[in-house]
Amino acid sequence: MAGKATAEKWLRELTNLVTASGIEDAAVAWVKDWVARRPDLKLTVDTGGNLLITQKGRKKRSLVVAVAHMDHPAFVVTGIEDDLIGFEFRGGVNPEYFQGARVHIPRLGDDAIFKIASYDPETGTGTLARGRSKAEVRVGDIGVWVFARSKPVDGIHQAPACDDLAGVAASLAALDRARKREDLRHLAVLLTRAEEVGLIGALHAAIHETLPRDARAISVETSRELPEARLGDGAIIRVGDRSTIFDPELTNRISRAAAAKRVKHQRKLMAGGGCEATAFGGLGYRSAGLCVALRNWHNRGNLDEVEAGKARRAVPMLEEISLDDFHGLIELILLAAGCADDPDPLPERLRDLYESQK
Image (tube, rainbow, N blue to C red; front, side, top):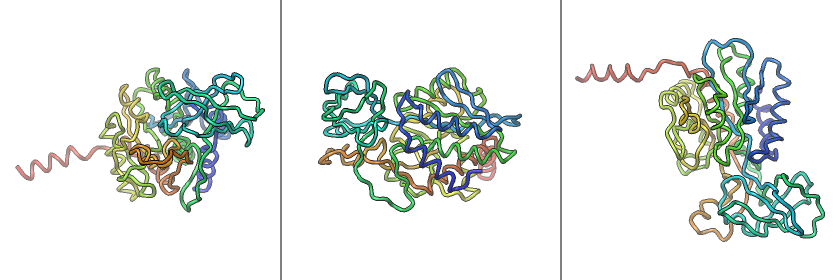
């Protein structure tokens, strides 16, 4: 069973993988190896390449599925011509971050670093200057930012791809613990592709019914830190995202369970971006959201200053999350699975209130 040290090891390994929308190969390989060492789990790959991990044997309850995505914003090489390397950027990042920035292609070693020569924000495409490098760049290679140096901080995890490989790590850690509990055999994990380019994996899974129609989908994410939702203040029960509000009854059940177990948490509308609970909820599934606050969202250091037009330059940075929040997120996933079918006391309380005051 995954204790804190093991969960943090998985977090470090996963959030340092090189991944991009549609090229999640490293994450897929890691997960397949993880499942292969647990014979009581079943891995199914749907027609969109999403990974569904369920516990073998009969379930007494409808599935509760922790949903996380395996991609992260990144550069993908699309062509090579003379001294220029063409790329497509897959994900949402402000144009300012591309000005004078450098890109590392990890497959080619530590020295494979190239300066951005051009970028068109309308198409999300551009070129890298090869310079003196003789590295054998290939179409399909993944590039990542060359990050500014980050000072280590106790209790803070810093990595290139917390969004959403931290969600993958938390979901798998929760499933590893649920395997030892008869009452949580209905907890499953769905790991999706291409979230950063339009929720593609989640939409495919919802449209093609990768999950049974009576399953409850719980998006497990990292979400941009907000003034009212800070790192270290607890994992977050997410009432909604930029697009919509999630299933209120399911959200309320998780909130009550967290309060009853005295799990440190926040209950917030995280409107910085969209998440996969919207994809499932909008296509007929009951869905809720859990997340942790994320600093340097999509590797955008000083994002507030950039958006306000006050930054001298935009600085690519490692993403950051609180380790305490991460462990709280694992607890919330387990609580969500345990309480998903609890009776809702609110209607009775409201009737009692009416009767006492009429």
